[in-house]
Image 1 (spheres, one colour):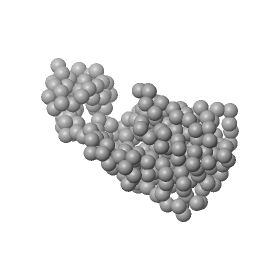
Image 2 (spheres, helix red, strand yellow):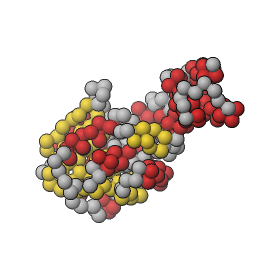
Image 3 (cartoon, rainbow, N blue to C red):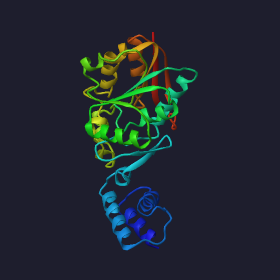
Image 4 (cartoon, rainbow, N blue to C red):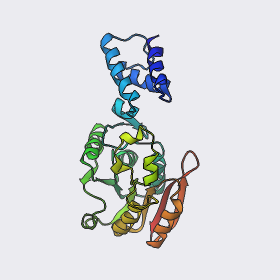
Length: 272
C-alpha cells in the first residue's frame, strides 16, 4: 500500500507516531485519512508534507490547523501551537464562571486566541478582550475568531507595558498562559518545539521561568475587581512560587489544579 510506504519514510527518519502523522497528512490532502487511492498531484502534495515533517517541522504547522477544546484553529509559523494542557485552564475559568453573569474577561498573551475563543464559545454573553505582542500571532487569533464567528476585542501590545496595563479596569477575570520555560528547558526542547516562537516560550530573565508571572501580577492586579479571579497556566515546577506570588499581591483562595498527567498546571487566586 502507498500509505505504508509513506509511513516507513517517517519511521526511517525517526518520527514518533508516524502512523498518526501520516493519517493526518493524508486526510488533509484527500479528505479521508484512510484513503487507499490518491492522484499523482495528491502524492506530490503528500511527499512535500512528509519532507517538511522529516526536517522536524511540527505536524500542526504542516496541516495549518489543530484542534483545541473541540474547535478547529488555524496555526502556523510564528504562533504557539495550542496544547491539551491549556484546556485545564479553560475548564477552571468556566467552572468559576458558573452562576455568574455580566462578566468581563481579559486574556493576556493570547497567541492563537485559543483560550479567549474557547471561553467565548461557552460564555457567549461575556465580554472578552485579548492581548498579544506578536502581530503574527494576532493575525491567527483574528482569523480563528472570524472563522468561528466569535467577537473578541484584540489588542496588539506588550502586556509588560505599565502604561498600557493602566488603561484597563473592572475585569472579573484575567487569564494568561504566559511564556514560562527556563533557559535550560529551552535548550532541551524537542526539535519540533524549537520551530515555535521563542517569544511565546522563554519565561524572561528569571532562572525559574517566573518573570512574566511576577510582572503581569504586579502590573495587572489593579485591573481586576475585588473578588475577581487571576488564573495562570504554569510550568509543572512553578506552583509554589506562583502561589506565593499571588499571596504577596493580595490574592486569596489560591488553588493549584493538576493536568491529565497529575502535574501542577494551573494556579488561581481571587483578589481581596
